[in-house]
Image (cartoon, rainbow, N blue to C red; front, side):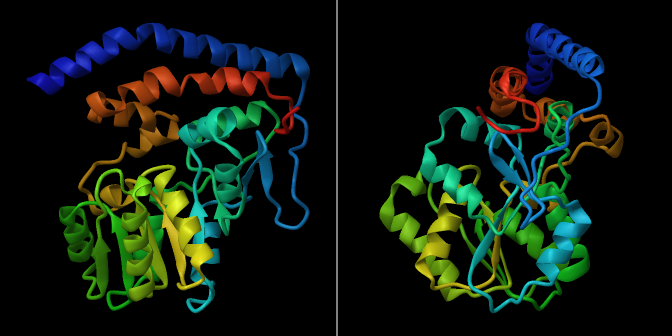
Length: 294
């Protein structure tokens, strides 16, 4: 089968990358051992946030993030949640301009999405909480959101929206899927803003991928026309509904969820995980202890 052949080819071609990553991990362990205990993380005294490469991470686990979301007034002005992973951190550290960094900084909550990132941050003296977007979304639907609560979803296919509606018996799910490349089309962006304003909901699911979903969330917040809180969660709804299978818990516990995703979608994800993601080792190796930038 083509998929099986692709998987074997990906594994064979990725061995040098895995070897390099393993060497970097070993170097990190030896470095940490030689330098003694990690320094205390940099904290924002007002929010309790940690900073890694000057990117804010609120000190929350999944339960804490869900509690904050559940306790937020549905009528409060529109706000949004970001869950930076390795891809987000590399983009913000290497390529993003001040506008995109400000969008992440203005998020109502910013939680760590990646177990690998949390592990690497710990070696640089920054102790991050862990609240992945997929886990937050699952807990919200299991514990907070009722069948008759209004939910607005932007992005994702009609099939994914239908799967979400069926799984949780949602009676008031409003769904809009903008066209490809919408973020560069002012009219399409405006249509998304209008849709969210016209379908007020306690929770808005932005399933558009980074950084499109964060840019749209900031635009909606700046318009002042909407209420509720948006979750910038990419493909999380696909995992929540079972459209895509998450890694088994043992792989998650071993920080190998990325490998499960790679083997599940090799053609789409090989470059992200085998070419781009390994740069995080070098970026964090060059960063000073404690998470600040020079």
